[in-house]
Image (cartoon, rainbow, N blue to C red):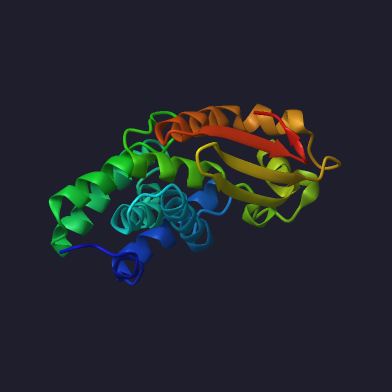
Length: 219
């Protein structure tokens, strides 16, 4: 069978894993990784591929991978990309999904975390870009500003963010940051590795990666 985003989004087991994984990350002090995050990653990954002219089926696989990509956090944050890929394999295989599609999805999931990530195929590249560019104030759970760590401050400072594909030229992350809460230097201190990974992912898709913060191009 051909897997679709709607099928995976309505899967009760998948949604349980997403919810329980986010509960674990909340206990560990991480930003939001629940349905808002995975839904946004799914949609952006798909939109990137469609904007670049990839077919709807490949974009649908990117959407599925985006929705599933963080389920491994239910096991442990460490190596969650690999745990998630194994879990996704079991779910998709049990559903009778085509082996080629399973392979593409689990490869993307298994290659999305900074410590081991590499854009091995277009779906993996789109997933990396969608995941690593999801920086926004609404992901911060901590409401006590006085106890913010640098991750809280950096995420909370991002008031607007958007990914734009300029076909034939670049994939652009455009951020509006409140510099009274966080400096641009703080952003790079936390997210430099992610931005380098986004550059590699964009190159896999035949494009440059551009980072714009408060109207200034920094990459």
